[in-house]
Image 1 (tube, helix red, strand yellow):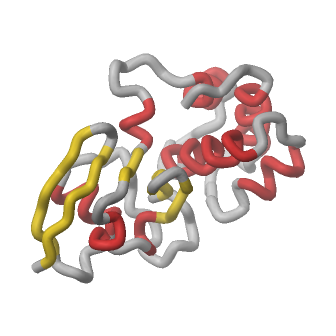
Image 2 (cartoon, helix red, strand yellow):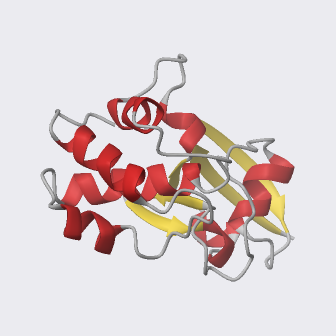
Length: 156
């Protein structure tokens, strides 16, 4: 067992974990943060995308021990008081989801994209979300939602 200290959604946790435990399983199984889904377990779908130290990562490809000393933000940490961020509202208002399984990862990847490029073109949004798969929407409303959020100041 390896001792880790990690801040998740503003709360610091100290735990002993198996060195092979994936971050996605640590978040879901140990911390009860089930907003980050387990999609493919191979880093192909992006459903499990979270922010680790300011960069979006697929949490099924990161070990919990790699987050030691770091800060993780999950989709649940974006709206701790229940008030959706502009990006989350844009997804809701723009019907950028159907089943919702990919939505946490899409929002986290879009958040990272908008931090780096606050006013992307539709093509830049498509490229920025390239590692995140959706099997329901056809992506058009997702792209529109990100563009709608980019027209406003994105604070989260």
